[in-house]
Image 1 (cartoon, rainbow, N blue to C red):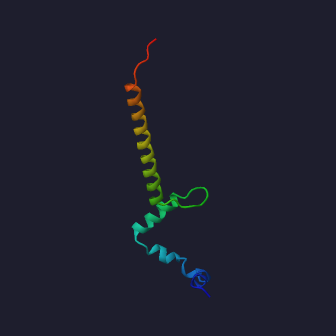
Image 2 (cartoon, one colour):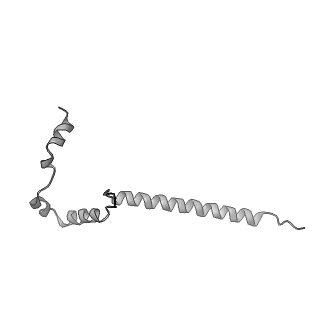
Image 3 (cartoon, rainbow, N blue to C red):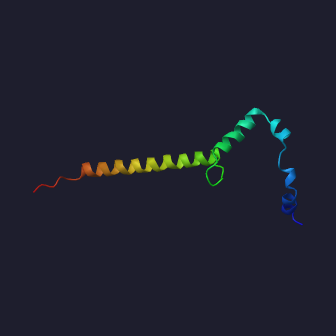
Length: 84
């Protein structure tokens, strides 16, 4: 029998009791409550790290787009004006 099979067979040991949950420090309880508040409709928890990564990627994309706009504006302003 594999170790993972043994671990899954003994699921009662991984589920904390009410007394164990109540004994947690308040900081841990707040963290768990915050995670519960971030659960989406599919039941998947969005951790703070995932949200930060998404935010950072969005900021990066905004910076890329702003740089592209600035480049296009410079090219437009530097282009010779055509007259008839």
